[in-house]
Length: 332
Image (tube, rainbow, N blue to C red):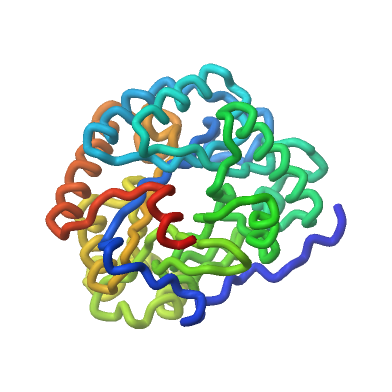
């Protein structure tokens, strides 16, 4: 493989990069979905795992969100985009007028295939730029063919956004990226370091960046990424600090985050004046047995209750659902 060594730390947004949301935009939230194939989350990635049977659960789940007035920003990857049944399901969802199809790049299941699949190369931003670009073009063209429009927003699978990825996306006509997971560092596993990124949207390299919302709560929350990193070196350090009410990192997702923590995270983000909260989950979670987060019917019911309570808390704060169209209307 050509030399792919590139810096993997994403720097904090400068004041000039920060999005200044119009007052009329208010406080909003966006629900994003990584729409993807099923695979064993506990095993090494295998390019042969391309089943999309869990998509049969997507339609009923979408209807539940639609009834709550919430559209879904669907980040669709290649195995889903080439499955006619999955495309039909997603196309029906677009009839709500608020959902939209974007792109999600899982490089290990997206042609052309040059790389040996391992933890490092599974992050597309670690690949040589010409390989990353070729995979992005394959995915973009396939989505345009399947849904009749080129995608405008993007997520790199495994949060694998490289240092040249934003400029690459802008050159292909993308407008929004949501690959950065605020407060998280994936570099120890071969990925990217977003520990300097907070939950506020910003502009960079011709793109609007909407980080997946994560916040720190607790008495020591101002210690932030540095303290959280140090705590990770202690046995059960993160759990000890969280239970003591000292420091807890909370991403806004029902996957692995209990509703009590999630509600605290919503409150904290709003106290920090985050004007757009970005939630996420993975489509295989909608059918029990495909991800660690929903193993059975009880877990699935808890998933629905999580969203019910999250939407109630957001409504209490006057935070309303938004769409990609509405975001682009105010960010240009």
